[in-house]
Length: 527
Image 1: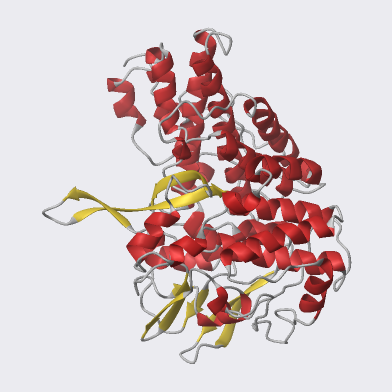
Image 2: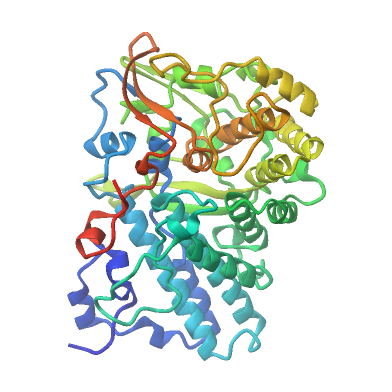
């Protein structure tokens, strides 16, 4: 057996179930030995992004999806994801694949960092400096999203919560043993990578920079990180570096999209257009997102259907009026035993492995970071600092861009509107819906009905609409301790049964680490 260790296998238990290490150990030398030029360093950074993402599991776990009565179009994997059951099956959407793909991406970033040091460091060339920035930011991002899925929400007690292994060097042992550590230390390492990488990231490395961490995408990561870790001033600064002095021109041009040919392929392709100012980082991934949140009945057992849409988000009467006010309207698909209310945003792409047999893989493209999200991140941070007029201005900019409304939002009219709304789940069955939900964050907010709480309801509602179908709603549910039911929707499009309830302190809010990782001796999340 050769002495070299392949980079894929060197991730050890972090990258389970991808390939057999023995075969690679016998046939391939350590790829790091070939990273002896700037171009090769830049090339390996293509692999510093996950090919499998969290989006479908996170979306199914959130309050954006209900189960439809007697709908046969489902799978055990989707059943478990929606029911917050610890994963027992692996496929391209699974958390096992997301875990493995993320740690392999981290491994690529670490190999690039190691090679940059061997080539003389950032002082050797501007290319190596930019590559180091991208590698650090990518490493931070992959660890950050792993934490958001597999760890408890960040709070003042983070030192008492389980973290994850923070991989800072290329792994060189075949069966490394990892300690989980605590979440506080884990987040400190993420922040250190972000803050070292930010000044180094460049827009000049690639012809199509939107598939890599460019300058604005790096600042967008910083804005999300600082918001999730309650560093409000830093979140505002980072988001401002994304949206600039004139946020309106940086947002998605929904009015122009409404003037296009209205077919799902054209609109979803425009939604992920790398030339759009709104799109900062794009992920191409193995995924059926385009089927589940598109014009198909496939997998229709779980759906963002009429009940949740009409009462809670995209089809509900909101502060601007009804759903007809959207520039790019809600699309409704009805089948025998299910309904889908969706925005056209998730492309359904197919890669043929055998065109004659018609076999291959489904792909989608996820907008990992957008200027629209960054603007709402800033609005939320303003609210937390009591800067309500500035928050209302950002919320107005977002609203007037996505809808035809010319209404100007103020702290007063936001408070008036949301105080007239009922809270979800106040009935004895805890199934009925509305525009606002009780907020239970670990940080302190003002009482229900206050200006701050009402503005947070508005901001979280806007965030839910902006991020729908992409999974980010799950992280807001975790951050704000939002309780949600699992309910079955009948043929009359109303809830008929509640099957489960996710409470504020339910340990299932931290997804269980993959079974094969646990079987290798890794400490599981409590259940």
